[in-house]
Length: 330
Image (cartoon, rainbow, N blue to C red; front, side, top):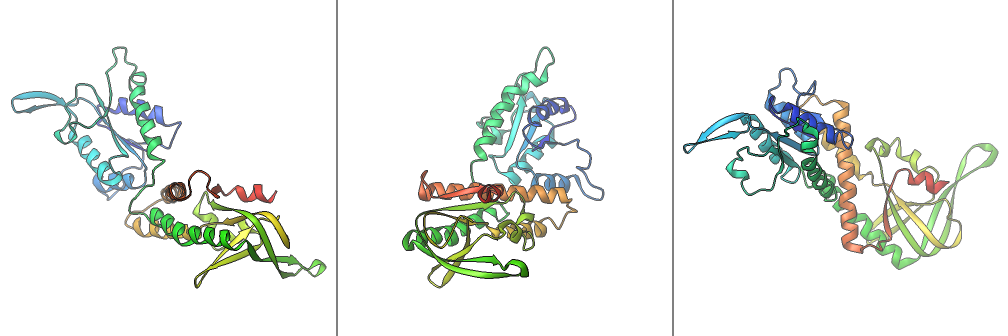
């Protein structure tokens, strides 16, 4: 989260930071390294808003403004401008205004419900802003349950993965009730391995989509380590073959229930896109990691939304963390 304010509103912004810092990574506008050499303030702010999920602009009565013969207390121009940037970069559901009561609201924001606080008589700003911050926290929690549609590809990747893989695999597994399974077998003292192929029938199945914590976990070097020696099978839909893994409990013959596992390496496209879109900035490895985590989170939320919509609460498709593989193998 990015928190912006005027210099005069910095104390209030620090109180807001105090509320949120135990809940998320918070970047106050005074943070060292926010503004880069040979880069304009506008570029730096735009970049910062590109790597955060939410923004709060703290509006305090910094200037006296005369409009149509009346004088008002109003926010500093740069705060209003940065709120506009936040709206454009993050969308109206992710760009918040927290303003002190009595401050003039710009006409474009008239009628919009905002988080407000009253200047405390006792000077306890943290207590004063806490109810407003709590309302923002609840709005953030609600927003995090929604798929995010943005310039990065996680939403479309999730939709494509659902349509092309999950839907076809669920339909075929429901229809056929038998699989051809391949499993590597160690060759004993020789240290080599052989491929064992057998037929397996089943009564019911569950499909587990294992979403990584980091995109580094699904590269061509790390992914084989994750799936280890799990048996492999596939189904065909039309001319296309869909390959997946099964748990180690599978054996030749008949299993009443089987667990099918897939790790969506389609998320690798997010890493490439992030590299391309952030090439105009000297992005740190930490910033790249933040963007990748956001992509993974949105991929998961979008996929869950699609599963709930298509299959309902009794869905046989489950989204699992990477630790599921360790638990399943134990």
